[in-house]
Length: 153
Image (cartoon, rainbow, N blue to C red; front, side, top):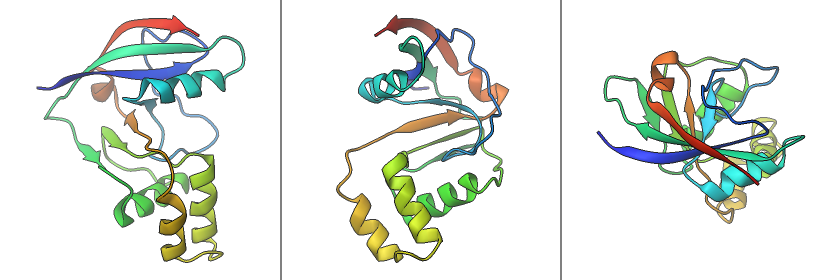
């Protein structure tokens, strides 16, 4: 079992992560979102009102959980993001892969509505900096996390 440190940007310390169902759908559906890039977690934290806090967790993989991992943006990743952002639920405990930030999401919407072709979408996103997200979608998935502390920026 592999153990890694991952980060969650917030406006509060989150020693006990929860799956929050809020008003809009994210790239990989509802869940508790983290990243293995500390710099990205800092950016997430700085977008919050109030304090800017980066929470640190050790994540221990559990081979018994149903996981889906996208190593890079692919056709399968694009279709999965479109489906999840459209509100369709999936059956995975954990989903990991690149993030469709606001600019990339604009390109996704343009592709979905037919304003740009799939080829144009891939041309536009290939110049973006690397991103990473891992979402914990079930209580079993959350049990793979151990809170290591938090840092206020």
